[in-house]
Structure formats: structure tokens, C-alpha cells
View 1: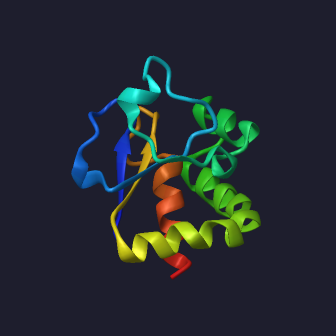
View 2: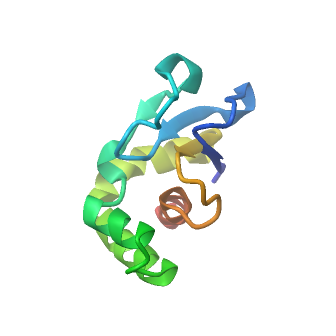
View 3: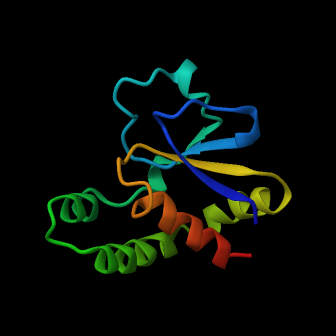
Length: 116
């Protein structure tokens, strides 16, 4: 699969391929024209409870990852099309978090790779 990750605040490039925003809330200060988002999958973003727990430190990375993967199972069928697209072309999961390696997009990428 060809799934890349990119912050919403980084400039989009044609090499990004199909750009999918995977946050529940639109990134602050980024216009829709600037973002060049092809699809917004806010329904597959972590629940508010899970996101808040991770950001306030009451939930560590391991716990966040485990619980978010469990949440993603309810979207398994609706995510198959995205996994299929990634098997044919580059898909870039766009996220707003300052944390570039431990974020919901990283977990979603892992989940999509499991759907092969």
C-alpha cells in the first residue's frame, strides 16, 4: 500500500496523490483552497473522549493506539474503499497534530495496511 502522512499545515504537492483529512475538526487557520483535500473522513477520527485523554496525558500512546484501533473496527467496511485506493495509487492521510509520529493518522495507516 502506498499511504503517506502529512500535516495539514504543510504545503500540498501533486506527489501527495489523493489527500484525505482524518481529523474530526477542520485544521485552524487552513482554508479549504489551501488544503487541497479530496475527501474529509471525520467519522473515522478518534472519539472526542479518546482524543482528549491522549492530549491531556491521562492515556499513553499504547493505550490510545489500542483503543483507537478498537474504534476503527466499527468502520472496517467503510474503510475498505480507502484501502483499495491506496493499493492502486498514493493516498496521503492529512492530520493537524503537532506530533508527527504518534497521532491518529499513523494508527489509521496501520489499520488500513491490515485491511489488504
